[in-house]
Image (tube, rainbow, N blue to C red; front, side):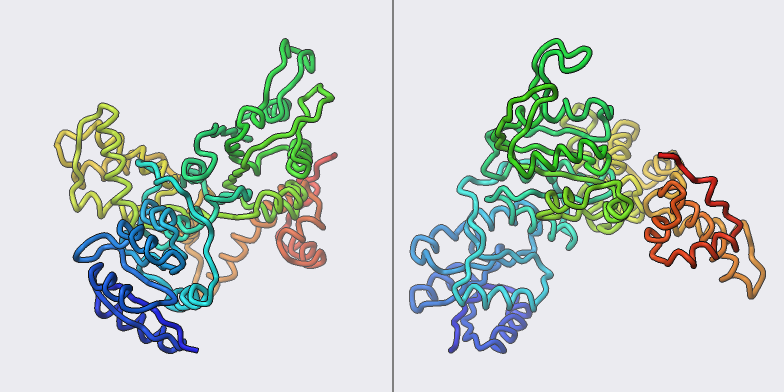
Amino acid sequence: MSRRALLVEDDASIATVITAALEDEAFTVRRCDSIAGRDAALAEEAFDVMLTDVVLADGDGIASLPEVRAAHPRLPVIILSAQNTLDTAVRATDNDAFEYFPKPFDLDDLVRAACQAADGGRGADLLDAPAPDGLPLIGRSRAMQEVYRMITRVLRNDLTVLILGESGTGKELVAEAIHQLGARKDKPFVAVNAAAIPRELIESELFGHERGAFTGATQRTAGKFEQASGGTLFLDEIGDMPPEAQTRLLRALQSGRIRRVGGAEEIAFDVRIVAATNRDLAPMIAEGAFREDLYYRLAVVPIHLPPLRERAGDVEPLARHFLRSAAREGLPARGLSAGAAALLSAQPWRGNVRELRNVMVRAALLSREDEIDEGTVGQLLADRPAPAAGGPGDLAGAVEHWLAEAQPSPGTLYTQALAAFEKPLFEHALRRTGGNQLRAAHLLGINRNTLRKRLDDLEIDPDRFFQRS
């Protein structure tokens, strides 16, 4: 049976491609390029799904959706947009869009969503309130579009979210966006950094303590779970949480109750959990350093936050945003030349968004001109400290440095480079596993006999890494 689709798109080439793809799936497609044309089509016939661009010649395709909803409350709407910001994604969500596709999009995904919508499937329920202004997430790269789409999927539920990404990518900003746009926005947002709390105090910090529970506990103190009641608890750097605290956290998440340190009372809590880590938890789980059952409790909805080097197109808008922010904070208002923007976009940004912000604040402070030029940016970049060996994105540079220094003779490049890389790799595995060869072999993904042979060949003494329990 033919499905009927209304396509509101003012780019003729995009409209032609979408129409052909929908017709291949037995859709009858009516095309128009304006809100006026959309309204005329809706008045004349019924449709199973509507696909609409946002920026049209006679108005905003999202802003005018309430009129469509009033007249056609059951019509599923798919939003297509080149205005690829979090605000656009949230506006689409707020207006009960069935799905949101930033341009360029995957045509197969779009057709699949249109089929689901036309066949009666519904998207997630969406917020009643408009999105707050000034959300800190910026970027129109495809990688960030996926982040935005994942955020919109968790706004009207309390599923636990695990944000994964390198240091400086903005994991706390994602957590704040989930809170600010969600149903708990009027309740507290409480953040705790597991890496910054002394090992012996982390359980007290999370769950609170009773008076006299330990030396210095002079009064009953509520922990972060209680402080965040009704709101969101953000557990940052969860990969650095010690094993005993992991066990108590898992028990709390399973039962929905906590017990203060030194107390006997079980206290029910009502918080949304958002966790984050810059560490790769898979090898930690393999080594026994992170509980697998806790990982699955936390990673109900994983959101992967891309490093800045994978979204170079976002560097310039981020840089300009940081300059505007610096001006609001009292620094001189500065522009950014095209050459400076190009130089910034070409950097690897090992410190990610945090490093870029640091550079732009310093540029706003130190520049002698109203427009920051390429020379100023180049000097600031040259003044940055050299990256630590093994830092994110540094492996290629380390290999180039080794090649320049070692200058292996012709015909031996592969074997010498492999040996040079293999020895520190095996030593790293032994160091992380305390000299346990079985666990080191598992970490490396090789069998134990191969490990032993390579240790002998590379003259590595595993006993040097042995740690007594």
